[in-house]
Length: 425
Image 1 (cartoon, rainbow, N blue to C red):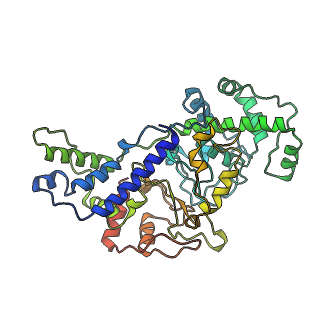
Image 2: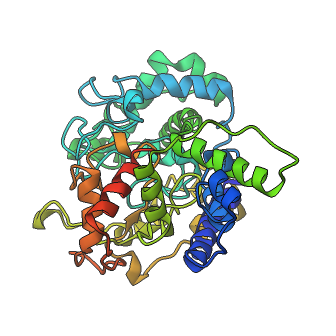
Image 3: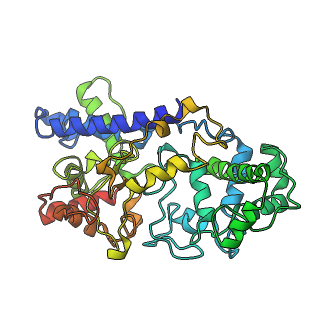
């Protein structure tokens, strides 16, 4: 299965199941008393939807044709070292792991990421990112390796530049790099600090390089991202109490349907009564499953849900402003440093642009591990899951574009149960 096939499968499966759920909620036949006990009162149709959300239903990580080394152990090994090396920053103190801490679900628990300076959005977790066709909150990158390059040159993240990184690779990682890629170019006459973006001095130094040297440096920079992406591809979620609970439901349903073919069922309960009720809200009147579906609890799409900005000075167009960036990116799937053939870049070739619905829209984050990942939303605007749920209960108008959400009619008890369930993820 290719990257595009896998990602489209996840998206379509989640969307279809969400629609099915909305049609069937409350309309399924009442189960028999024995079946109700075995399945905690869930209907067979409900259990089918819940079963599709188990982590065990996630397919193998998709293949990225734009990264020829993504599955090589030597690339993973180099990627781990680069990911954790603070020398690849302007101040020698910031690494990828600074904002993507392995002890914090590969994020930093800050409202807005902080590298050499202050960012404007939250650092997104990296587990399961390989399944997403678009990276970052606005989807301005179309591959893990291209995503890895952005922060390295961003002025407030790593704050470095691509010629300095090439020199660092030659000094500290030459053998590992050249075992994976071509020999490093001759850098004796390449300035230490030069890049197409950055300070005026760096830009002038970059323009002073001939076209071949620029291409050679770009190739080294792209390869650096491909090694980091090989490591990031290995980052996956672990099963939660929710997964164990649904596994018990599916086995209980099978036992109720076929009494003579009993299978082992985990001891109950794996979820508290409040969490179970919260799950009913999640897939029912709360409508959370409309966007948070599938094994990763994300449809991988972009939505405007009226989340307020961090003040009038931080208005953010989201996806609407990102489509041009990814189209013009020299490191995209169709670019000269991609290993893919044009026909393998379907997501980029047929990307939606100029759609009013993209104004103020942001990526649906996965909810796995969400209870330990405060604060919330793209810039940490909400400190707790209680605030998040209350935002959807109120459904305020959007500051940019138009919100998709209507106010939810949840009681205080229902809202509290929904928050309890989110903690079980």
